[in-house]
Amino acid sequence: MSKHERWNTLLELLAASGKLEVEEAATALDVSAATIRRDLDELAEQQLLVRTRGGAVVHGVSYELPLRYKSTRHAPEKRRIAEAVADLVTPGEVVGLNGGTTTTEVARALALRFASGRTEAPGTAVPAGPALTVVTNALNIAGELAVRPQIKIVTTGGVARPQTYELVGPLTVGVLNEVVLDVVVLGVDGVDPELGVMAHQEDEASISRLFAERASRVVVVTDSSKMGRRAFARICGLDRIDLLVTDTGIAPETALQLTEAGVEVLTV
Image: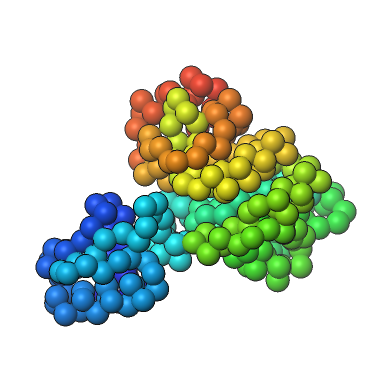
């Protein structure tokens, strides 16, 4: 197991329980206690946890794994979700993307789909202008798509959150208020059949809510681990969501509740 994989696992264990003991972690990862101590010391230097005598606790009251440490969680499911969403996008559309690991995969799938410029069947007219326009408040997504000449990339202004690379605040709101989206693809931290979709941070939730308000169609993308979970800040109710794309791990009763609320559910 590489250092990155160990750190990933340690942070996930810490996020699940709020605290971690060295011996417990060494057993879980099948490495020496000395290796775990070094890992915890290095993670503490990055302010990702707080070292204690014999282990570590989460850093601060609200704990959220930085994006770079969440990218390997449920990776196959996220790729399947992304490919399914990319197939639903029509050439010439304006697509909104908020930040997150799943929407980052969607951005990559869109880049691959539109890479060749042949996005229509032979003999079909291709729309003038860019093959696709993407509006995003995520710096990492903008960076990946900026080098794709067939995709027009529009970024919002705002203040960057280092955990998710998302731009938030009044400057972000100002740009989104001036655009109209055909479809927005939202990554979320929780989906509840009663409360709707949620995010850990209120500033990110408000920007995602505005994305939804500016779009004709709202697509939520999330792996099944987020289903039935609640997060701190509400984005919107299920009545605003047209389609939810997730993996086959979703509980049948949850899928039924979403369908009864008017949300189309696509499992891949």
